[in-house]
Image (tube, rainbow, N blue to C red):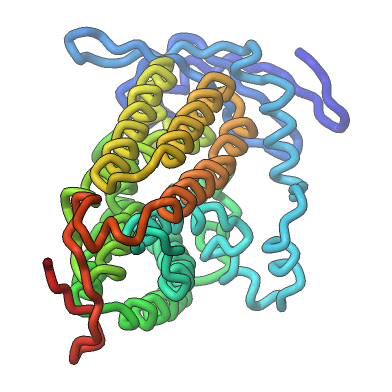
Length: 415
C-alpha cells in the first residue's frame, strides 16, 4: 500500500468475480487485486502476463499488485488523464478556444491529437518522394493534397471507429470521455459529421488522376470494416495497417499515373510492419480494460512476447524499406537513414515499459520523428541522384514523360 497526494490506494481481493467481469475472454484469472481511487472509482487496474499452452488451449493470466499493477506512474497517469492535465499543444489550444458547441466535433475527429494524421500522412510522403524525378524535390502540390486528405480521412476513420465502438468506449477509462461514448453528441450528429469529412476527402481525391481516384475509393471499405476486426481477431492491427498505409500506393500513382507494384509493394508491406509495431504498443495502454470488455488486440494476444515479436516486425519494416531503396537505386544517404530509423525503433522497443500507459503513449507519439526521418532521407537521397538516370534508364525504371492528358491525368510514355 502506498499514498500519493490526494490519493489513497487500497487493495481488494477480487478473484471470485473477475472471470465474470472478463466476459467470454479465454483467460483464467488466478489471483488479482483492484484499486479504489476516489476519482477513478469502478476501474480495475490489472496487468496480466499470458502463457499459452502448446496445444493452443486456454490462456492463463497471472495478476499481481506490484509495480506492474499499481506503479506510481500508472496511478498518476490515470489521475492526470482524468483531471485533464496535458502537455502544451497548439491543437489543444485551438480546441479550447473554439466555441463550446464545436468542441465535441473537434474531439470526435481527434483534432487535439494530430499524431494519427501524421502516421497516416508519412507513408504518402515516402511514396511521393520516391516517385519524384531524380535530382528533384517531391511535388509540393501533391504533398499538400495528401496532407489535407490525411486529415479528413483520419477524422472520418475516427468517427467510424467511435460509431462502432460506442458501447465499448464507455467502459474503457481512456476512451469513456469521447463525445459519442459520453453522450455529448448523437449517432445522427456523428453521421452528419462523417458525411462532411468524407465529402472533403472526396474533393481532395478528385484532384488526382483517374487511376488514383479509383484506387483511392477502393480503400474506403477497409476503413469501414476495421473496427469489426477487434471483435473477431487478436490482430486488428493488420487491417489497420492495410488502411493506414494505403497512401504508399496512392502517392506513387498520383505522381506517375499508375502503381509500380515492384516498388510500391515492398514499401506498402514495410509500412504495415511499422503500423504493427506502433499500434501494438498503443494497444498496451488499454489492455486491462480491453480484457474486461472483451475487445481483442495484439497486445493481449502477445503478452510477455510483445517485444520479441515487435522486433521481428521492425526488422521486416527495415528490410522492406531497404528493398524499396534498392529497387529505386537510391544512393547511400537513403540506407544511412533507414539504418538510423531501425536503430531508433530498436531503442524504443528496448526502453518502453509496456505496463506503463504513459510510457506506451509517449513511444506511440514518438513515431512522428521516425516518419519524418525516413521522408527527409528519401528527399536528400533523391536530390543526389542524377536527372540523366531516369532518361537513360540507369536507375532500373522506365523513362516517364508527363504530358497533359484529356482527363487531366499524366500520360505515360515508356522509352
